Image (cartoon, rainbow, N blue to C red; front, side):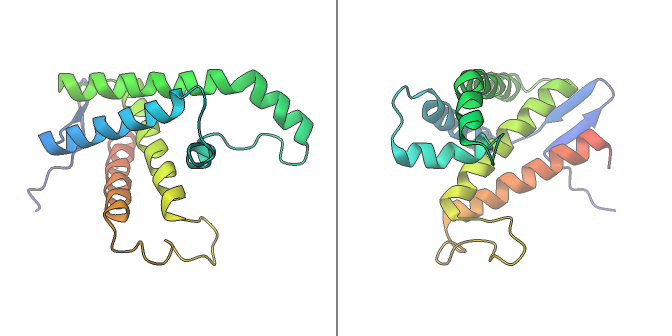
Length: 162
């Protein structure tokens, strides 16, 4: 029997995020950096390309409808993401038991971080594509992508009880 305890566990009254100080600081720093990217009133083209996967196209076959959707919904979607970062900050700062809604917010934030890193690493979900762009397989960014994927997996396990 393994004595390893995962970083996210279910308890009778909710869930516990049990990250070390360095990991906590890392996740908080990354969500802060993403908050800055999302809050920039005049983002660069590079910033827009990094966050593009956070806002999937709603109307891929209708540019006019897509533009209208983005005009109407973009601010609300950004505010929703920013709110999840607040939940993550609180959950990591308090080291207390969190509820299911808070865990879902943590999962959404981790996934947003992974999506942005995936853009940086040119990770594709296409079946025939290499998992990561050439030259990045041994990079710190790819190791971070792997860590966030692992952490997200533990969140899912805790939430589903598996």
